[in-house]
Every structure is written in structure tokens, then in C-alpha cells.
Amino acid sequence: MKRHPNLLNRNKTALIVIDIQERIANVMKQRDTVVDNTVKLIKGFKILKAPIFYTEQYPKGLGRTDSTILHHLDFIEPHVKVGFSVCCSEDFLQKVKNTGVKQLVLAGMETHVCVLQSALDFIQEGFQVYVAADCVCSRKEFDYEIAIKRMVQKGVTITSTEMVLFELMQEAGSEKFKSISQIIK
Image 1: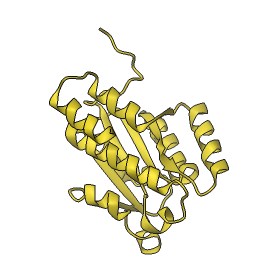
Image 2: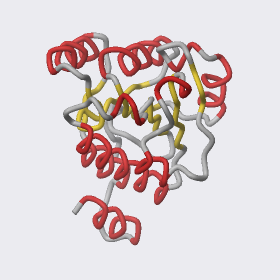
Image 3: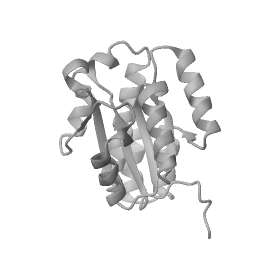
């Protein structure tokens, strides 16, 4: 069967966690939801052996990645950046391209700044971009809503943690399905 080209394929997908850092996370109303769902994505991507990247925006000022998330990323080095879009760093962009993936799932803070700019730049670079709406947030709900609408207008697919994980699995009955089902519960 030929699958729809907008469905995620675990052999062509990477997760990018953008700037979920201590100091900025502390002022987010949706902090706990975003952190919990991002951890679910990280665990799922690890089970599926799909690439994971994460960034830190000016950690001297904003602190390190939230400790709950960092605990699950201990095997990966962060990409430290000062530009809002992760694509501003040619090194980082090249690392992502070198994986051969064509689809990117984004999680992070803030939706209307770093996530939006990264999503649009990744589209410009030829990637299919998916933003897990329950893994992103902004300090103000209005900024979050406008950013989501703008991304949709520009070709970003808005999705959720569960939709991402079930699309990547494609079917039930495997050990991976059982492990990921435990994460979602």
C-alpha cells in the first residue's frame, strides 16, 4: 500500500528539541505539559532509534536544558546557539542534513520565536516540518495561537505527541509498540 506522503516515516524522521531551558521554562504556564510530552517523544524516538537533536539558546543567560528533559538526553551534546532559528548555525543544519532525514518533528520554546523561525527555515531547506502542538508553548497564549496559525499557513504540519508516535510505529503488536504504549499511558 502506498502511504500518504504527509505521514511520518521513522526511517526518515528526526526530533529537534529547541531551547527548553530552565529560566525560560520557569515562566511558562504550560511548562509541565510541554516537558512531559517532550520526554515522551524523546523516549519514543530512542525506542525507534530515530535521530534526536537539541539546542540551547544562550545558556549563560537562560540556563541549561530543563533537568527532566536533560536526564533523557544524556547521550547527546546540545547545540549552543545565539540565533533564534536553529538553521542560523550552518554546523547544526549540516548535522541534521547528514542524517538523511526528510521529516522533522519540533518541540520547544517559545512557539512564536525560535520554534516558528526554525520551522520556516527548515521548510526553506526542503524538509517536511511537524510541530507537536502539545510540546511547544509561549509565555502568552495569543503569541502561541498566532504562531501556530502562521506555521500552518506556511506549510508546517501541526500534530501531537501521540499522533507522532503512532505514525512512526505504523502498526501494533511489536515490542516497540508495547514499549511506546507504556510511555503514552
